[in-house]
Image 1 (cartoon, helix red, strand yellow):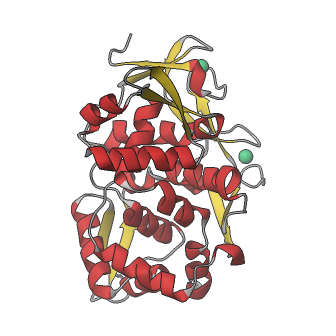
Image 2: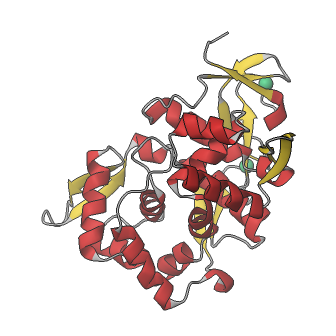
Length: 307
Ligand SMILES: [Zn+2]
Ligand SMILES: [Zn+2]
């Protein structure tokens, strides 16, 4: 039986929730992804993403303020600025690799993502592998246990939870993970991972109004992110489960919440995974499938050809 109050507080105060509020909107995520594939100029983002000028200017200045991008002039007259990832920005690389993996398997092939990655360190084409930093074993969701410890400093006041419900109602704001994943889909997936499988449980732990939750759940069933099956004990009750596509979002979720905890909020996450095999607290590390070494952003080249 799930402790709903504990799960609700853990979700609200999770570094995932707070991180997604910061970077989880569609355009911020797309601009960052562009930066990691080598985009540096305003005009190039604009033409690749078809993003309105004022929105792009807003997102770039937000990322500069957060210290994830820095400006550097590349032309004096008229004055033009290029945008480079800072050392802090480069720390988002693991989650970028996880987005790339997910898109490759499940996304509508986005033209802005390169098709193949090559690891300079070993010289081979590779796939990023989610592993445990303590024991370096390849790790998936089933290899972990989760304990919950809400973080008081990150618990939102009640009025904020009310605003959550309204934001959730305002419709889909996809974030570059295909067109079907947005901040709320990620929060719902996380709630299911933590053991909430029924409508009333999900509504309670996420603080979303019933009508909005119903619409979101049926949207996720349609786009293949959830399975809905009549409950064995009570056929009038639907039980929601993850699909292979939504299970595969786990790598992104864990890398992103670790970044938000370690590199941005400097607070522990309320959702604490441990690796069953080695017994250590789970800290993700992304390894090269060819040489099993960690993958650093400056050691990867990409192309649209396998060679
Ligand atoms: Zn381990
Ligand atoms: Zn390698």
